[in-house]
Amino acid sequence: MQSSKEKLKNMASAAKEQVDVYKAKIDEKAEKATARTEEERVIAHERARANEAKAKMELHEAKGRHAAEKLEHPLVGTHQTHYHAPGAVPMPGATYPSHPLGGNLPRNKHI
Image (cartoon, rainbow, N blue to C red):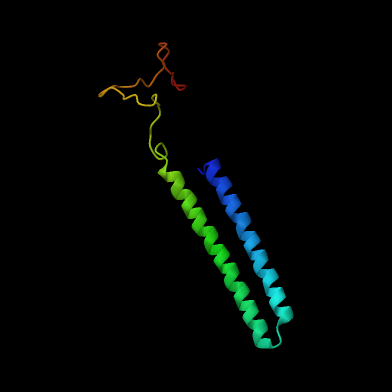
């Protein structure tokens, strides 16, 4: 499941990618307007396509970085269900009950 922090970072990166694609299209139009030959127009179009591809590549790299940052968190990916105070060390060999301490055991609904 994707964390909300990672999702927000991905959304920001996607917005940046859209802005970069839009800038590439605007630059292409400006270059085509000032172009004197057909070759210059083709070059402007190819340059815009390269800039769009670069923006998409940066988006995917950013998403990869965000996923890596999420995995670097010490509690992600572990099956740690109980938390200790900072600096506290759990007793070696300590077991944790799988039922409430009040004495009421969870019942099987099929019995």
